[in-house]
Amino acid sequence: MRCRKCGERAVINMRHHKLALCGEHYVEWFAAQTERAIEKYAMFSREERVLVAVSGGKDSLALWDVLLRLGYQADGLYIALGINAPIPYSDVSLEKAQKFVANGNWRVTKEDALPAPRPTLHVVDIAATYGKTIPEIARAKMRGQGRPCAACGLTKRYVMNRLALEQGYAVLATGHNLDDEIAVLFQNTLHWQMGYLARQAPVLPASREGLVKKVKPLCRFYERETATYALVRGIDYIYDECPHATGNLTNFYKTLLNQLETESPGAKLSFYLEFLRARDEGAFEAFNRTEELHACEVCGQPTSAPGRCAFCRMWDVSR
Ligand code: AMP
Ligand code: FES
Ligand code: ZN
Ligand code: ZN
Image (cartoon, rainbow, N blue to C red; front, top):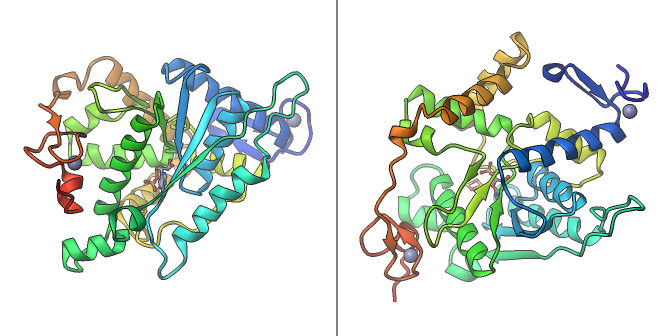
């Protein structure tokens, strides 16, 4: 397979776009597509400060890299969850994020462009801040039942929102790719979760005070595409996924959707884009209820629960 632009050997063939590209032209294409998504969905401008939630995996590091190379003011936030058994998942992923900042490959190399300023990596260590690792709090709260993922998700969302607000970032960006988005979409559709469908979007505006705007600039890229970008750019990332995620429902849906894609190239992308079109046309509007929110009596973050927010209750934070 040859690159459509220059005829060199292609590193990727994207059947759904009928496009094969070499490394150099692929990186260029990926950046241009990211920029288009940022503009199309009015995610943020070059004057705004963006906080990228980095997990040390391919998607979020690819996102940070491409944003810096496009000249956006992007800092990183790594949340140390303390998941280090049976593999040192959290420790290794922190190392990857730190290495990304230290090696400076994200610097713009084109002669006409200014070098990007060195980005900051904020690190929030959950055990050091709240007294327990994620597996520990999950065990304490769930008496050893089930996976720690729910406790983890709640904690990550809380910490991301809070740090972004406290540090004055205009938006929070996550590395969700198309495969992540359609796995959730599939699940929400299977159960006709209209409220969730109404809120699933590339951009969630800061609808209330205390909630930061959230964006997913890579939501139209297949997982294979973000992986190829990371590879071509020489980004060192953690290959393992969280040990608690193996065999979960999301991965099962991803496998199903990949089978569909093999039979019908482009099916994954059109499932997502047609959903967004229906959403834009107001298909889920009636379900976009704005909940009554008030400030948590302990931490002040917005919550629908009376008194303490779900985070403060789970972590037993009190005044
Ligand atoms: P996941 O929920 O693990 O699929 O991750 C989705 C996105 O959340 C990633 O692309 C990152 O942007 C962000 N994220 C996941 N884990 C972390 C973490 N430990 N610290 C900061 N951001 C994270
Ligand atoms: Fe949170 Fe796996 S990343 S439990
Ligand atoms: Zn080429
Ligand atoms: Zn609270």
